[in-house]
Length: 280
Image (spheres, rainbow, N blue to C red):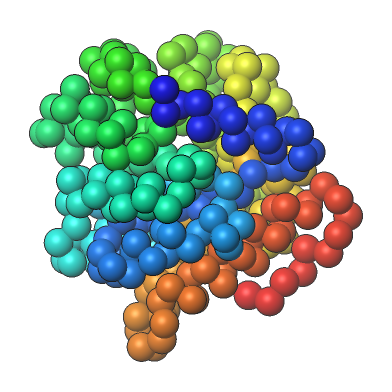
């Protein structure tokens, strides 16, 4: 089962006594070849897990940076099939780093849940986050993913009370993604003190690691969240580097990987007392 990669990675992180760094990038942003270079470079830059966004025209949970990333990827011709091809190419040189696809339900519904799940497993995907698929509507998708050995990773939010949380965690595997702020990605900032009790509540309800995302843009903020969570997810700050490098006609891959490395160091050393100040 490809899900085993997620479990193995979190077991290793626990053994090392640190949180994991989860890097989000958009497939095909700004183009396929550059996106593949970024994807292949992320583990060496410190990414413990990778979230690979598949572009969609109406990403309702995303703020402007990831919306623009999706638009760039779509304009460059990226598709759901193309996203799977990127993952397959990544797996030619990396069999260990978990890849979580993150996106929206419509492309999966169009492709067919069973077909998508089988193709994703064959491409080396480990789990899927579908932002706009509530648990009440997830049974067919969950069954297809389970049959293919893939994790369905669900979102919990600051407004998820205990009753709702008990529904969210049913059928969730790998980890739970805790959305640290109410709102879209890349707008508000996460507060580790506010996040901490929610992470513990989600961890207790699910029995799974908890990755915290939304509102984390700097190594210092990432380090603060890493002290209370099992993993820290950063997306908008990385796709912003793509946009800036394209605008300045600079090397996109090196800009993104440099940013990823600075964030990864903040997460890696958050619990050791080593400096988290890095050049951004």
